[in-house]
Image: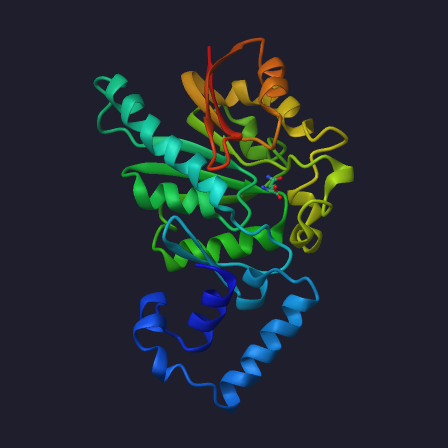
Length: 270
Ligand code: GLN
């Protein structure tokens, strides 16, 4: 949906189809004008529409969003779809372990979009979702509750692997992350809505690659042999990420987004 459709379906509490089918009943009275005016004023101040409305859609799931937490992007759906696709093979290769739940670690879960979509679309999963931000975790928990997947997801406030939970010898089948990957000086330059989003979810350091370096160093310890690491990447980062993961890891491949940008990287451990 485009922004105007999103605004109108919100104001008139109807679906996009109904907006067009019943166009004659889309009449602005005082209440509708007031809402429209409020939304446009905030939009004019550069506030992302998703923050104004308080929700967005991710893989067909309605999720709450709010200032202070990164807004889920369509590109991240490709990351989730890639995991769903690959997981089928992973399960097939885990002979004799058919009854075992798949264990997944989601680092930097934000609104919870990745963890919740995986819990919804994959069966038998145990997910740990971490974030450094308590605000994000509270929202992610709320979103998990509204999609009935709290049983499958444990939320942990942790900066990467700092939490004492990671002192145990836990190993996951899958680690996934959409880490902050925007180079510091680029934040808010190309896309002014990001200027209103939390820096902690965007800032990947001088070259945007800080978190890939950290992951290449520490994530292997928490993956079982043959486990997979799925990462979202920023524009033009594929070659550099390849280099960063050149030791101890094998790059399985990349997935492009709708603009032909290599957006997802699949990396094999061991
Ligand atoms: N995709 C976001 C952007 O380009 C960045 C999200 C991130 O850093 N993981 O604005």
